[in-house]
Image (cartoon, rainbow, N blue to C red; front, side, top):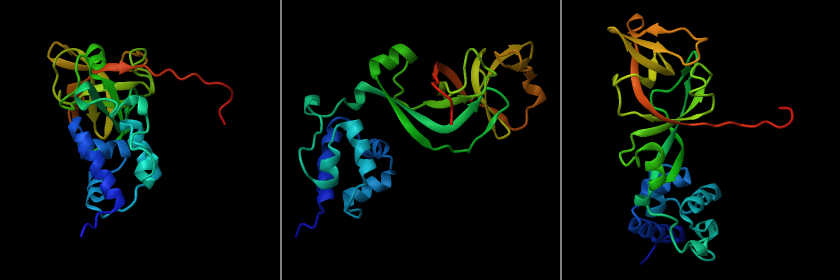
Length: 237
């Protein structure tokens, strides 16, 4: 006897179609804002319903109707003009935004293993032109800048693209470094035999790596910065 739940059937239908486009359960989990385990339980029938916010995330990412996912009503595809899935995985670049802020200043405390709070999707061609990579290996992560020590190169709230595969000095450029429990964006340069840690905002003093070697390490190399310039209207309340 077939004991599949209605949601289970819909999930299998959607996942099978998505697999043909190169996606998997992890991609669905990211879109829905849940863990891979939750997606597995949807597929196994252990969870018999889906929350509206999770269904809306799937609709926004893949085009599957949130009404169809939640209630089983209407057509599976919300946007008929889209034809089917909005884009295949091979045609896009994915960048994970981590739940940390890199201080361009005195430092921000951060967790050792930050969570992914959001995901940026770019057409692969655009990512290649802008960043020089389509991030197939997932080494490029997104973090949010804080404070102004790297201004005007990096300003507070800018999105910083960091190659976390680079964990040693590879020449003068801007790096993401961990000093104690503080995450910093700083420019590193080799002066004589010393690596000098400096800020582009000269209001902040330089220091030598050798002066603070304990608990200091390179987390990644900054490859690009996406400026975020908010315009405020009226008075903050």
